[in-house]
Image 1: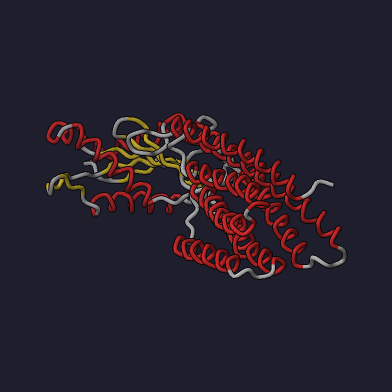
Image 2: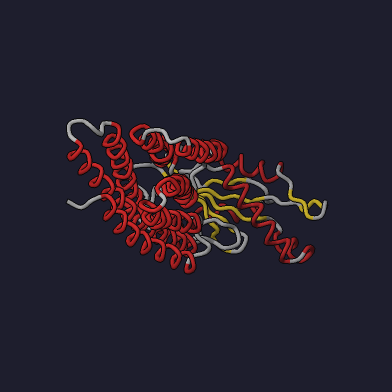
Length: 378
């Protein structure tokens, strides 16, 4: 069987390749959150197995101290890289406290030369099992990227294997004389091999997640109006066409009153900010299940599902009043904004027909004095 030292040499070679890949990926994608932290993780992972393999025979005490310090850095940057990449709100204060405590404890118990069967399992618990279990918990409970389920599941399995491998390695040292030292040595070596492959699969998972996030951002850019951050017209129609036919839906058209006067009096930059102000108000007044988009110019459109005509009238009226209440200022100058609103039920096979009815109601509102809601009656 392969001994532990040979495995560490192989691990040093493999981790050097992980480091090269991580650095290359960081150079190519410096804007991606977590990439730099993953490069640090790969660096300390490589150092941990390269330098400790060198010092194992010549300076075993120094090798153990370096190994433990690098081990803490590996776990810390491994967790931080995925937490930042997946934009998970974690407990930073707790992580920093753990980091300093782990370095102090692992160094102290190595310096005072506690028995290896006690020292190494304790370090495995503090430096590996606690942070990796914490990361697994954070991913299962707090991850918000529902559009990358396969990539997240793949990483979760890799992390689970890493935890199991460290647990097996810890137990092989805890029970070093039971049932036989030979069996425990083989368990220890197999555990190290599993840890190596878990880090390899984690690297693959990291690259998959980065690739998926970049693709999602490109899709979002193609579906989003760059000025307001709302959906654009094309994306809106794609969603409308996929709406279920067994529930009721209503279109609401919004148009900013006298918007040309705002542009003429204050300039187009202020006009753009006014559109952003309107879009933020719309998003704040609508639920996550509602779909809102910029339809064109100063026109906006929303589709509301699972509601009655009374409900949609109440929603439209609330938005109209919120625009008036939430005043828009530029350099302490009040820029008055009101909305004319048209509503129509989505019941035709062609959504453009019912959107046109909502548009007719919008212009009826403008004709009747603006700043009001008109509903199409069938």
